[in-house]
Image (cartoon, rainbow, N blue to C red):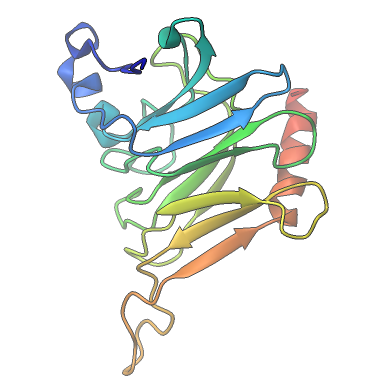
Length: 209
């Protein structure tokens, strides 16, 4: 079968950028409005573990680097300390606001100096050049140190309104943190529905997306 190795030439970009990509740590497949089925493939170890995600469509020779688009963060863009955040650790592609465009939700469970974790929703269009950051519509953040917010993501339409909700796993969350009887690592799943839909619709209206 074909092999997809977007980081196969780290010497060209530099080992600090693409030398330790950890490509394939998470993947998601979605059919886009153009009718093409595209795979989102993460490289959370890229760029000092800031991470990045590649969008690839299939051609006659398989998944090739020439059809790859980067939608991750290869640089810190003011979202806290992104180095060692493992961007793309988990991800989910979906039309989160029902406008006919596919967005990509990507997590950084070790983001920020306090390791509270982040999930951002990007436009999903990507860029054909490495080192160009996609537009970020929404940034969601954990609220507890070390909860590993974004360890797992899923997009599912559970209320049958035609628009999927975003499920975010935090396996190390402590429900009664600070109390004398606290229990470690109970974990939790946070579900974002209408809040994400309305914020995306607002962002898209402003950017004519």
